[in-house]
Structures are given as C-alpha cells and as structure tokens.
Amino acid sequence: MPCLAMSLIRSGTDLGFCIAGIKSIGVYESGTSKVNKYVRLNALWRLMEIDVFDEIQRLRQQGRKAALATIVQIRGSVPSFQAAKMLIRDDGSTMGSVGGGCVEAEVWTAAQDVIKDEKSRIMTFDLTDESMAEGGLICGGKVEIFIEPILPTPKIVIFGAGHISTQVSKIATIAGFKTTIIDNRPVYANAERFPEAESIYSESFEQAFEEIVPNENTYVIIVTRGHQEDQNVLRWAVQTNARYIGMIGSKRKIRSITEQLASEGIPRERLERVYMPIGLDIGAVLPEEIAVAIVAEVIHNRRAGFKHPLSKKLYQTSQA
Image 1 (cartoon, rainbow, N blue to C red):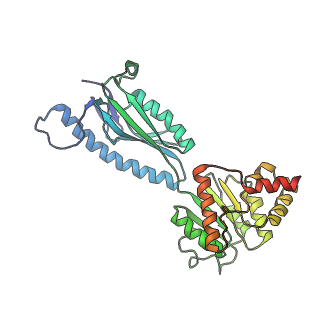
Image 2: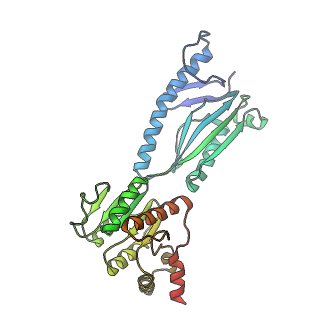
Image 3: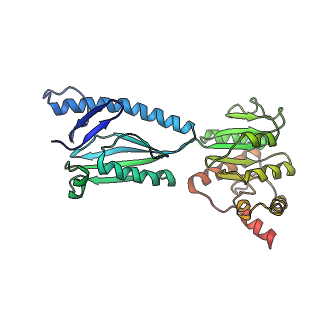
C-alpha cells in the first residue's frame, strides 16, 4: 500500500508506506513487514526528535526564530504518525518531517506566517480528498498539525543600576527575560546587586553603545541617575532596532528631552515609539511597584504588539 517515500536524511533510510492506525511501538505477534517498518521508523523519529529539540535550543541561543510543526491527531491511514515533528527555521530550512508531499509544503508556507506573527495555528488535512492526489497522498486518513512559534529568549537591557533597576532585573528574570545591566558606577553595577543578570557592564554608557546591538528581541529600559544620562541613552536607543524603549521621567522632563532630540534631527516617528513615562499606570510608588509596572508593560508589548505610548501625546502637545 505505497503512499509516500519518507526520506529520513539523518538515517539515510527510505520507508514508503501509509501508517494504518498504529500508534505505539513494541513487539507484535504478526511480525508483518509493515509493522516492522513502523517500529524502525518510530525509533528513528525518537532519535530525530532529540535532535530537533537540541536545534531549537541552539536557535534560541543565537537569537533566531523558527516554527515547530507537530502532528497532534491522526485518523485512518496517514503518511506519518502522531507526534512526528518538523522544525522550520527563519531562513526557510527545515529539520524533520510531518509526512512530505503537499502537506509538508502547505505546513512550510503556514510556518512563515507563524514565525512572522508569532501566533500558533492548527491545520487539518483530509487525505481522502482527490485534490491530494497530485502530492501522492491519497492515504485515506486525516491529520491535524499544530504549528507553534519558537522564539529566542527575550533580553532586557537596563541603563542604570539603582534601586528600581535591581527590582526590574529580578522580576524580569522570573518572567523569562535575560537581563543586562549598564552603569558607570562599579559600586552599583556588580554581581552582588544583580546576581540574576546575564551580563553587567560597569563602564560608561558611550562604551556600552559600541558593544551592544539591540534587535527585535531586545527591550531597552532607561532609568539612569540623571536627566543628561537619560537623554544620551535615549538618543542612542531610538536609532537602534530595539523592539521596545522605555524611559523614566516626569512629563516636564520628557518634553524637554524630546524637544532637544527633535531639534537635533531625530525623526518624529522614532520619538513617538518610546514609552515614557515608562510602565503601566497602576499608581506605583515604591521601587518594587514601579518595577512591576515596567515589566508588565514590556510583557504587554511582547505579547500584544506595539501600542502608542503616552509619549506620543506628550510629543504632539509639545509641538502644538
């Protein structure tokens, strides 16, 4: 009952058959060729599954995105088995398989949107449909495939190592972020005060600008000890590809800084994307409360996407 030649690149093995409702490995009394092939295939897939998860870890460490497609349900004969996986990297390359043919082609296409939108989806394929014949997949069954985004570990870069920063770093780490601390005062920027931080720079902000390259996975928080330092960091930050930029400060300070940067030629749209004053408005007063508001806003930005911050209204008011 040939249906699809499934090529396992890792093993160099070709097994062409439709799996007719067999879901577990083991010793079967029938000893048929079909079952023996399935046992070998399943064992090979278990090994490849380990490789897939290792690759996911490697991609996340590199700051790359991907999508993982997993067969979550099968009915009848299908060209694969439940829990089979295929990893689609952000460059379009793949690892593993969910059956090949037109099914895999459509999953690959959908994965591009999953990577872009960072939202999961489920696809259902009816392999009894005559339209599947062109892909060589009339096996007589149905298969559901779950495609989920694989995202790099988000990073928060905190400029300033004061009381608010210590709390932000702690809370952000609990929420799954890696934190970087930058301050030119070694007595503040050190591992004793920030034991959970991935990296600490006890150097000038200008030096840090040369070493840090924010990308769409980076969230920049500006909470330095002074007006001028905040302005210098913000000038640099708005010209990077950071996904989020937030700065602490009063309305008066924000207007002053945005007016100054605008006079220097910083484009309006870059200033409008900054969250300032930083943090959700929850009436926070204590450093711990302010930190909760800041991390909550970062999480909201990450999960819900960009929302015009209060700074846009302040900027428009200052330009009126």
